[in-house]
Image 1 (tube, helix red, strand yellow):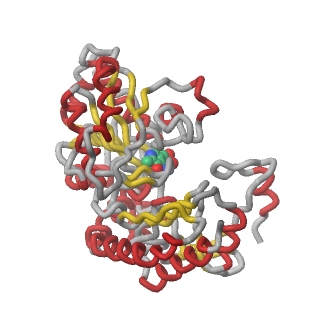
Image 2: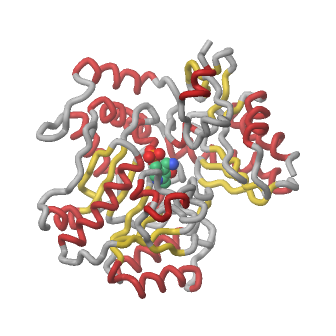
Length: 424
Ligand code: PMP
């Protein structure tokens, strides 16, 4: 048996207390869409381990890619050296992401790729002789990570980081987008953001946002027209657009990249989470030739970042295998099927008394409750029914692996309906 007492007393878990630790459940293995508890019970992972395991677990193709790379080299420094897995991966990323994103920086986690994106924007304007363009415009309800640069762009109130407010760079924030995914975006809907841009563009380096799906800051889906209008404003006032697709990338929202819903391309794009199919930590920041040329023709002459594990060959090799698998399988059909089934099977919750809203986009299903849920009790109920979810505040949501069967997805949704339907 695992030493859960040691875990409880010595090990930090994400956003956890070591005085009053929440329960953690011991997992010994995972296969397909199921994670297995130490006592042998299998749970359907409705979270895809936080948006990452899109192909499920213990995937032979991904295992084989890691095995084969491991036998060549697990790691080698990227300073002054290069290797096939990185070259192949960057080729794939350049080919798949919207034009004109053509340059790739391989980072080691989502938050770091956001730091890199911010640095790129700042260094770009510095190189242009406009160092005063150093602020970012972010959206309320946005979430971009836990490191200091990324934290400063998260919603200052609900972004989980207000404790550090005095230490964070003060950026500008526009209200969260109001028009929903299937709604148009009026002049007024973009009015506040447009005003901030008009009044502050001389000190603004970039707008940073999560395209279409605001994740950890509220699980909100907004209008593609809103995103198009932001792109237009960036062009009009000479700001860079940073799209954080760490959560939405690789098909999750129903398009390969969420920007495609709006038919726009950012100047800088961040990717992570599902990049390796949830096997290893790896992220990427892509930028246009214009941004890269701008940076490299400036005072420093180089881009000022270079982590130890940059371009880790093992992670790149499995990312290549994951992308190949995604493209080989009909991911679009898989995601469309999940979307249709989530819409149909979560619909009964719309009438439940404790439920404020039910929304679905791509392979993401969200039930927003009227009141915050009691995580511990809810998780016990879900686990007793063979389901793993990690509710957050008022939000109980699922983004299952794309390979989930119709039956398993039905078990997941019927469990949500049963457990949430009775809550106040
Ligand atoms: N941006 C977005 C949109 C995210 O959802 C996350 C992770 N929740 C991050 C950035 C940070 O990524 P990581 O946790 O890998 O540092």
